[in-house]
Amino acid sequence: MDQIKVLDKTFKKFIHFVQIQEAIARIAAEIDRELYGKNPLFLGVLNGVFIFAGDLFKMIQTPCSISFVKMASYLGTESTGKVHQLIGLQEDLTDRHVVILEDIIDSGLTIEMLLEHLNNHHTASVRIASLFFKPKAFKGHFSIDHIGIEIPNEFVLGYGLDYNGFGRNYRDLYVVTKDEDELVR
Ligand code: IMP
Ligand code: MG
Image (cartoon, rainbow, N blue to C red; front, side, top):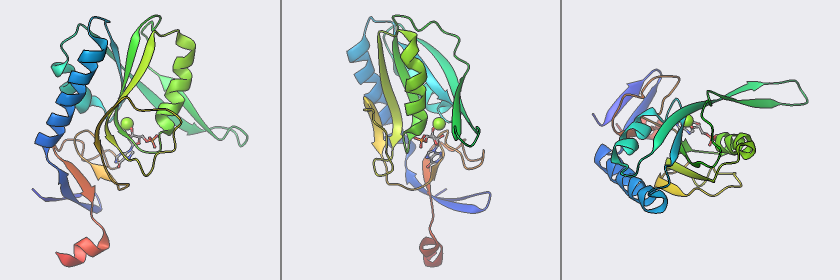
């Protein structure tokens, strides 16, 4: 399927699953090389990351563990603006080599908030691995240690990423079509 419809939008195939798997294999090799024997703890940011985390985890050779967290954002009072709460962290991170796993980094705000939370946890190290990255949208002040594939600043879906909850189940990555694309069809 080269074109799919999800809710009210049309998407076209953008990155084939084979290319995605190759990017994940490269990230897994990088992490193994850098953290072998250090018992890394992977920390996946739900929901979108679940497919990437599963595929990556199977390719990791070093002994390791995995856990998942969620960043919930809601509007606080007028003065505090948007409040980001960390949900689901049960692990003791003391002296652990943490690898944050994200499906995609866009503005970088989610990870920035998560890093702030992790600051108080006396970790041995914190690394960041993101399958997709939109460099043109990025406003973060942190560096990303492992990037799978850089993509343009456009809305994508599939391979765990959703549009209003739908479309996570596609194995390839799709990009939203613009009106011009629709006319060409
Ligand atoms: P950030 O905080 O702006 O970096 O956004 C990170 C989160 O927004 C990701 O974990 C995704 O859940 C979601 N997101 C960002 N861009 C897209 C996209 O193109 N499609 C689907 N979800 C996205
Ligand atoms: Mg996400």
